[in-house]
Image (cartoon, rainbow, N blue to C red; front, side, top):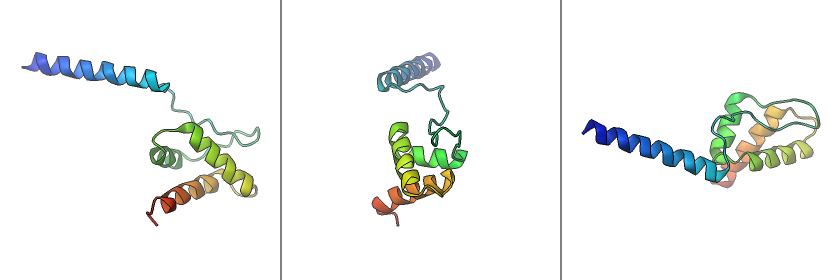
Length: 96
């Protein structure tokens, strides 16, 4: 019985790994890629996680939305821009 469960868990792990490869996502890559016009500003970790959860891990969309918010509000910090993007997404989804 335990051998069957072990085989099942290994199969699930292999399938999940293949799924990540198919999606083009590297499970070891956790670094945020947004840069603000050459500076190395990074949003705080909890904001990164929250935004990526809202976008189902889509870093390209996150970068695009943050860049757009930063372009409209150049005097604001990167954290403010990420918070604005999160708020807008939640508002548009009917959570506010």
